[in-house]
Amino acid sequence: MRALHVGILLTVLMSVSGTSWAFWTVTGRGTSSAATATISPPSSVTAAAANGATSVTVTWAAPSAGVAPTGYRVERTSIASGVTVPACGSSPSSLLSTTSCTDVSVPDGTYRFTVVAVRSGWTATSTPSDPVTVQAAVATSTSVASTANPSVVGQSVTYTAKVTAVSGAPTGPVVFRDGGSALTCSGGSQTLVSGTATCTVGHPFAGTRSITATYAGLTPYAASSSAPLLQLVGAASTTTTLVSSTNPSFVGQPVTYTATVSAASPGGGTPSGAVTFKDGTTTLTCVGGSQTLGSGSATCVVSHTSASTRGVTAVYGGSSNHLASTSTVVSQVVGAAGTTTTLTTSAATVRTGQSVTYTATVAVTAPGGGVPAGTVTFKDGATPISCSAGTQALNGAGVATCITSFTTSGSRSVTATYAGSANHTPSTSASVTQGVVNGQAAGLVFSAVTVNGVSVTPSCTGATGSSYSCTVSGGNNAAVVARVGFATSANVPVAYSSVTETIGRSSTGKVAGTGTVTVAPDGTSSTATVSATKNGTNAAAVTVTFTEAGGATWTAVLNLV
Image 1: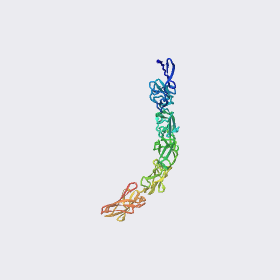
Image 2 (image 1 turned 120 degrees about the vertical axis):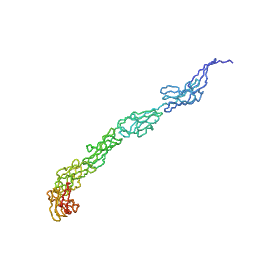
Image 3 (image 1 turned 180 degrees about the vertical axis):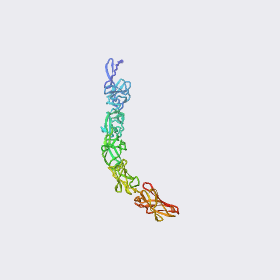
Image 4 (image 1 turned 90 degrees about the horizontal axis):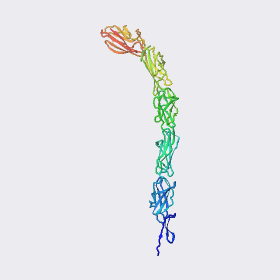
């Protein structure tokens, strides 16, 4: 058998079907071919990426027919650019032995993955996977809206932030800002619920606010901020109320007016600024209180100086945050104040023809005030007194005077009556008892003088009322008896007054002693007698004394020698 020498030229070709072919030449016989083996492509290629992830998990099924591959090579093709690059760290020199892999650090984009089965120089490529999108951070968009724009100071405004993404619902906190400052929300929820967060706030100042909502982001969602919302905040309307501490009141009585200023709905906050209190169109001059609002209130203490019905209002001037307002009118009834009149005399007792001054003082009774004005009438009993001097019109201190004199002696009951005025009520003083004595009376004299019962005429020296001394004579143990009374400077007996007058007496001699005698009203001499008795041959005397209305003391002495 001859040996057959075969020269083989072997070329490996890859067809679409994955069948491998070997070609050779046989000398003397011609050429032919025969199938040697088949490598099939992987199947069921899938690619999956989680939201916000930068890696893709690729899985496939190993070929179910043909020769087993040595390994696999994975390729990633960008749908946008058509560029294909190795994936999962695989390459012709670095094959994967498993049927899954993770392609890490994949740029954002949409891709298809294919798996190539490799055996020696043979390859078979799979059908591409479905598209898979990789997005490391899901883009978000934030918007903010207001429930009331424009609003007013203190009005509750709710800002609503909406955060949306191309897929899914973002979660996490949202910060609301006024310019660069975070708002302190009094209500709402600043954590996203179904992509929405809210912030309720009452702006304390008027102005234009630049409101933004900022979403900080939470994997896989990226941060975003809204465009500024210009929130117009105007001054809030106000209402002013006014109350009086005392109504009705009296002239001069302190009255406190209290104004309360509050923000009108829907506004809020506590108004500040000044309040002007007015009586009609005239601004009141407050003597107390504070006309600057504190905790929304201002006060004015005033004492009305005239009686009438006042129309009092409180006018709030407003501020940058709260509008001006005026209270309704308070009808303040101011009545005349009560008074009391007191009367004094310059002398409790005067002589006929002697001037006496009466002083009437008119004062206001609490709670009234002010100084009464008007006239005072002075009366002797029911008869008006004719004043020779003084002023019967009250002065600035509420005082009136009357200077007069009386022509007859007697006891007077004097009063002062204030006629009243529009602002102060009338009043009458208590009566003052005025004693008037005979102005002709100059001193004490003796009358009906007897010695041992025999009528005698004394021998007198000195002036009546001053160093007046009388002398009578009698024997041993003689007794002198006399009556005492009042007389003019010419020793003419007169009545001193219309009341009982008491005269003191003292005796020396055998029967010494002291005592008094009285002179009846309008009497000229005492009804009782005074006496003295000699002690043997020794002299005796009786001395009588009387202090008259002007304060001088009259003395008369009757000597028995």
